[in-house]
Amino acid sequence: MSTHRLFVALRPPHAVRTALIAAMHGIAGARWQNDEQLHLTLRFIGEVDHHRAEDIAAALGALHAPAILARIAGVDLFEHHGRPHMIWAGVEPHDAIAALHRKVDQLLTRVGVAPETRAFVPHITLARLNRGSGPVAPFLALHSDLASAPFTFDHVALYESEMGHGGSRYHPVARYPLDPVASATSAAATALTSPQVSAKPSSAP
Image (cartoon, rainbow, N blue to C red; front, top):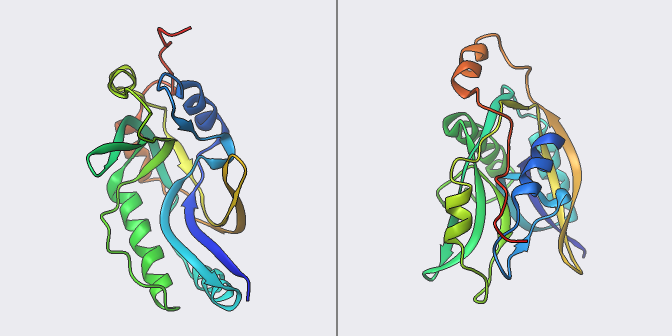
């Protein structure tokens, strides 16, 4: 029986993706993400059979949550066994995105997906690293204040991941709209306001 490797994610708008790509340079040996791969994972599901995939798609149809006014906020890394493993851009506000993550997780547990046990950190992966990659400190310092003007996540998507030459390819399976941003969000807009995403020039040619 065929299986599907699934995850649930938020997709940043084109202007934000373009600016993030402009910042993605300066680390030797890094495997930088392309435009198709830029997303904020709300919940990784993994391999499921066709029937479970259909159950998951149906369960997510019950999602009711407000759209999120967000912004890019700095860069950081994840380590694996003490070595840099992944470079990512942070996304704020953490609490609103984490609340959406919990709602998605609750819906998935209703159809037999094991609940998430890892700490949730809202982020967009920029690069994957190996033992030969680096150094990473200059990149982190150069883009420590990477920021964007507020933008809206207005839907959640269920994606299927397929391995291929050059890395994974992600195909949207279904989209689930989020409720329009409430007027109360205008207060958050003031707090989130900052210049458009801008990548500092690299000293490298």
